[in-house]
Amino acid sequence: MMKDIATPVRTKAILEKYGFSFKKSLGQNFLIEPNVLSRIVDHAEVTDKTGVIEIGPGIGALTEQLARRAKKVVAFEIDQRLLPILKETLDPYPNVKVIHQDVLEANLQEAISENFNDCEEIMVVANLPYYVTTPIIMKLLEEKLPLKGIVVMLQKEVADRIAASPSTKEYGSLSIAVQYYTEAKTVMTVPKTVFVPQPNVDSAIIRLLVREKPLVTVKNEEFFFQIIRAGFAQRRKTILNNLVHFLPNGKESKLKIEETLADINIDSRRRGETLSIEEFALLSEALDKGLMK
Image (cartoon, rainbow, N blue to C red):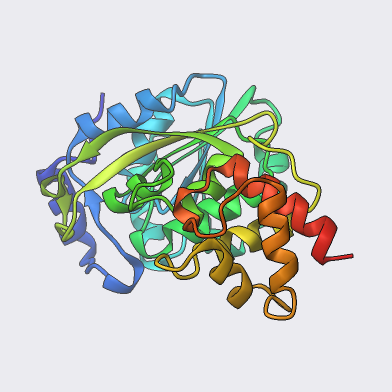
């Protein structure tokens, strides 16, 4: 078997050969520990029936580990300078396709139908650039792609926020949005020492298994997320004050909002961070009936 890309010696040799310099603006931190990569693939439960979407393959360290186990890997890379490197490092793996595109602008439904027809399941597995973690995760979920799940490495602080429970300081609109669509679990933490260059923070690997149907049922999904954003707009304010200040026409509807909270037994003096996703759903449905009519 070929030497792993993800060793300090081989990574250094590849970068020197191509005179590659890291772009801070692209959040480039490459993993140099094959065992960590192997465990990411383990947590994603990739088999020879799995199609994998990878985001930001870098020089192909994780891509290689995925290619050894998956049926097919489609990797989206935004940095043109990495394309010739990937052509060389991934040459031994005919089941890999690299697409030079920003994944946030990609038509992923189309990419899936073009590449994964012969796969039984689809996973997203990636070491995500920190600066675009949340938009990427929300795109993957909001587009309701036919995914089994998402296993990604991200900043530990963001992983903590995603998997957080009500009444904790990490809990917020991101926790609810991701848990609405998936079952979220942080499966391991990763020290900064296994990256080049070393980031300033530790990382974590989070596994998101897509639910067959969202955790709660709401008629108006857009309004539900609007209520959540309003609920967390200023964490120190009560749920009533946040809804009044951050909902359109909230000030004119203050009395109606107060009545609605009382009707569904939510104390108007509570803070948004104490409300469960079920309570936000109840509130959203009640306000949608009352305010929007």
